[in-house]
Image 1: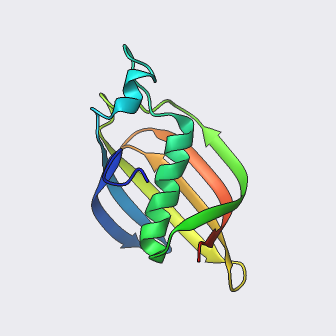
Image 2: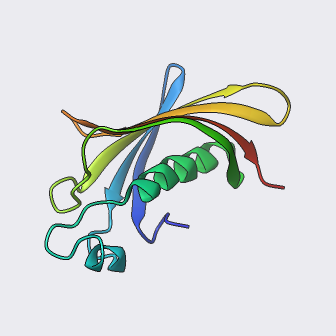
Length: 123
């Protein structure tokens, strides 16, 4: 898990049909020594995991991806410049066990990552 290790949630807010988290990256995490020491960036897989873990907070259950239908990486997240970010999550039930998740990570001016995926709770 990355929550409270790689990032922490400072705020959670419901807005119409989606939930917005304000998160703070933990800039001294050891992953940045390898990705990359002189110019750290958040690995793409960690960005996707951040969205998944914020969704798990909403659903109050651990989740797993069934299918990652779309992922777009628009800009690198540089933790020394982008310490606070917004994670926007929208969940739609497809049936009793599967959900459609759309999510993105942004700051005030830039979209970094967006995904669309099918998820289910781990039991």
